[in-house]
Length: 95
Image 1 (cartoon, rainbow, N blue to C red):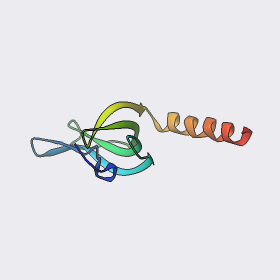
Image 2 (cartoon, one colour; image 1 turned 30 degrees about the vertical axis):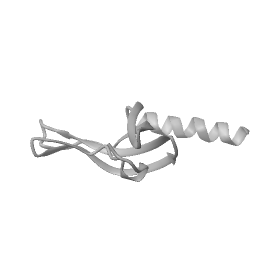
Image 3 (cartoon, one colour; image 1 turned 90 degrees about the vertical axis):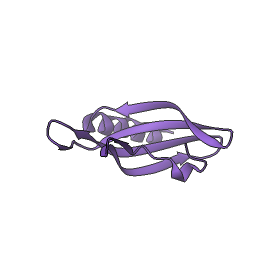
Image 4 (cartoon, helix red, strand yellow; image 1 turned 60 degrees about the horizontal axis):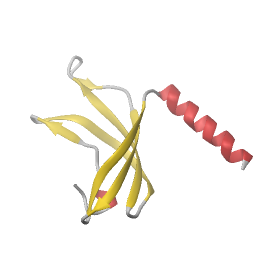
């Protein structure tokens, strides 16, 4: 766990192999609740390499001085990511 929101990562290693490689992150909100958008890749054991870029939005809650994961939404494809951007852009133009 991390005590500072900037230190939160989704990098994950198992038996010396990095299975989740964080490529970038954007902290969308800070405080007792933090929201972070991550860009990452997952290791594919079949190809012995990393797959396409993936995206996830994660929420963390600070409890006892440490951030704890509370929820996540994985964006399943680049097409879905584009649709999310398109819809949000349209809604923001309307307001």
